[in-house]
Image (cartoon, rainbow, N blue to C red; front, side):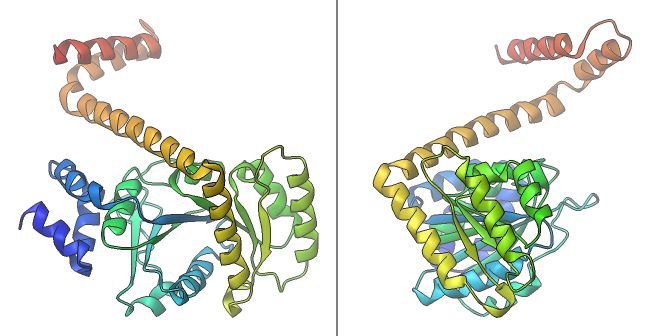
Length: 314
């Protein structure tokens, strides 16, 4: 089967074809460029929502409830759950989220787990391409749920149109949010498990922290109890409010432009890394020996390696 055939089947909503394309994106390889060329003209029509926060905050349950809310408005939904990579297989440890399986029989919902494959930011390099696969398949709302790994979760703000930061009641979460830089990336704060003690204090602390921000957009704070489905309507309303605010000011277009610029740089960096591993192993080993022996420093070694790559390209 050709790439063109596979893309056309995915565009018609065939779940197996969508899964095959995302697998192709994750694995990389020679056919990836051709697949992206076939997919790209059919993208640009979806809105993406990122959900991040500390482990145990209830992100998966919140995502499951949000899917149901979005489907009520008739949207087609794609979900990418970015999981820790297996140290052995490189695959996603958690697999497709068990809590989301209530939507498994809905043909208008597609859920896929993706491995971070060791990428520090919690967002796989393959995630933007996987999002495009879902866009081409007609999913007009794409949700990305990321593994909570602390400070490097700020990368999600470059991947999504609206970023939800999930915290739980308690002073510790609010302080951790500030430490992790999540205060700067949140477009909406979600205080989940809001039926627990300390919710009012957490909301107050977040409001106080936000008062110190000079950003034009002031994130809303929404209280939810995801296990009971409480606050989900208010949460989706906050997402739509942020979307409208961005569209009115041209901020959405600027945000997406930054995303594409970052993606181009990531692709170039990944290609250089691949070239180093495939074409410069002996040179790299020799330079490593020199650095270990203190004959040169790592920066000089990198300069020499770059010069070797340039010479090979001539």
